[in-house]
Amino acid sequence: MTCQLAEGALIWRCGQGGNQMYQIAICDDEIQMRKFLHSAVEEANIVCRVDEFSDGAQLLGNYRGYDLLFLDIDMPVVNGMEAAREIRRKDRKAKIIYVTAYQDYMQRSFAVHPFSFLVKPVRKETIIKAIREAVLYSREEGKSVTLRMETVQGMEEFAVEDLYYLEYQNRKLRLVMRHGECMVRGKISEFCDKLIPYGFASPHKSFIVNLYHVKAIRGYDIFMMNGDFIPLSQKRSTEFRGQLGKYQAGRL
Image 1 (cartoon, rainbow, N blue to C red):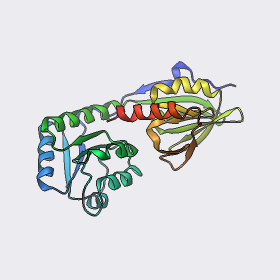
Image 2: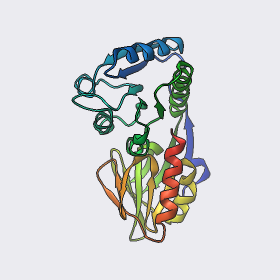
Image 3: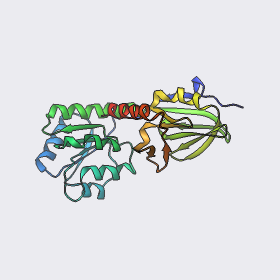
Image 4: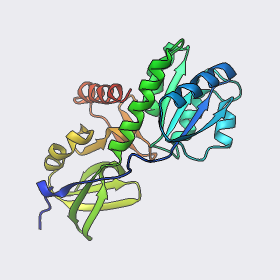
């Protein structure tokens, strides 16, 4: 049987509600800035717990999973960029908000998918707005899109955000996911049309990748968050880089 991604295969499921206790971390080596950010969190009027850290090493040594992270960049021992890279290896869902005086680091910050990049000095109203937007995004992400399809092993169901990429092999598609792989029958074009609205793009005629899981592009290699790398065709390079840049900018 040829597997097609039918209209009924995409199912919205509701996730977390409005009474969630949000876990927030503030990491800045300036105590006054930590107090300023803490007061902004309090004025945002959300149910939360706030932990404060004076440098990236302290944050990493005590990391227990956060919904929202405020990160400075220029800090002793471990700076904010290094801390974010380490955190992203184990936590893809944390919303990272950089609050820094170093605007030149904005482009480099894309590698860890920050939620926002705020340049000091920053108004408290801007901080509060960023907090509330992060909470809204978290609630929307709780409504995960689930794919249900017939694979060569049988009927499978999984969340779209768990899918890293698809590779066309011998008239089948290999789906590489967070917790394993599976094979389905079908044309790559059918899947591409259905997945593009959910943040996917095709860098090569044999691949579709989830832009959320792209770590970096070096030359014509796309490095994924799971350690795999995907070929980027020269013909599609400009278009794909534009799609990735637009996707990442939309998350700031």
